[in-house]
Amino acid sequence: MKSSVKFINQEQSKFFPTLRSRVNQYFKDNNISRYGNQEMVTKSVVLISLYLLSYLAVITLPLNAWLFLPLALLMGIAKAGIGMSVMHDALHGSYSKNAQTNKLMGNTIYMVGVNAFVWKVQHNMLHHTYTNIHGLDEDINTKVVIRLSKHAPIRSFHRFQHIYVFFLYGFLTLRMIVDDGMKLINYHRLGIIKKLKSHAGKEYFRLTGFKLIYLFLTIGLPILITSLLWWQVMIGFVLMHLTAGVILSTIFQMAHIVEGAHQPLPNAVGNIENAWAIHQLETTANFSKNSRVLNWYIGGLNFQIEHHLFPNICHVHYRKIAQIVEKTADEFHLPYNIKPTFGHALQSHIRMLKILGQKTSQSVTIAAQQ
Image (cartoon, rainbow, N blue to C red; front, side, top):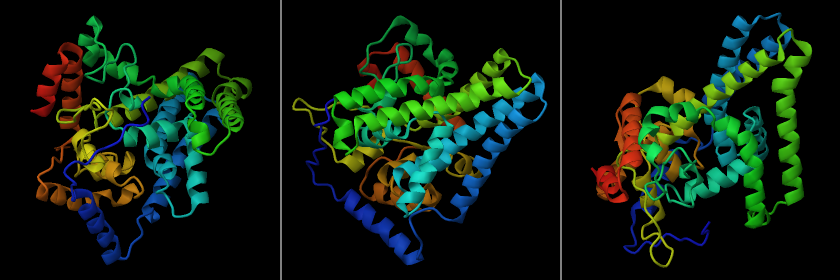
């Protein structure tokens, strides 16, 4: 992990200062806060209630397996929604201007079974800083059977990854239940915990404690107090996580592993020869900007360009500021990668998976720039 990598703006681009000034002026002219609003509060109540009410139905009602499984599916859908629409903004500090509110809503990540500290390091620090850079952005690390970076080793079975990948995407949150511990150990070894002014003992304790509580509530308690058999509970648990995993993985990958999204490497001295903001434009894509329902559920992650440029702005504002970002990018003759619909973005992601599984790095570069 070369944390010393820097973005070198050789041309001294005025793009981001100009864009930032315009976006700030938008909020000033409209006299609105860049944080969440009533829409954000309502969304949080709906999604959290959907998850908790489904859970309460499981542990209090006399359900047979045929009624239990739809509730597990519903919990998975709500779990993904909470991850994308509630905890994501909160852990970026954009849910509210009140730090305690952000911390409280950020703790909804434990409903997903994931550790908040590990998420902040992996997502806020590494992914948002080193987007699509092999070896630095953990979101594109090759997980043996899935090759998401053109710079990663290629194996013969990768040529089938566009076929089997969505099944494996389902294991995202299940894997994170275990992987969080390994990542925390690695972050401790690299000195990241100390750098973020925390203590390793506290983080290990919180990670272990919350994982055990989560597993008890989602597996142990249903086995103890319901009429469901242990293996029925396990099927429901896995179904819940597979549902959330497929949704979360697909949405996140459609923003970066699509045609037109670059995967640059540092130069000989270890730097990226680009301005950070322009790097975000070149490595990120939007999709389905006109779908209000999708935008509501996935927390504005169809406006990933705006999110990557302004992660401290709540997603409820992305639709409006996207017009400013696209216009400014056009003025500076910079790319603004957008897929018109969810279907177009999904197809582009599948094509890139196929390319990454079959082509050489040079071929991938050519295909990605077309």
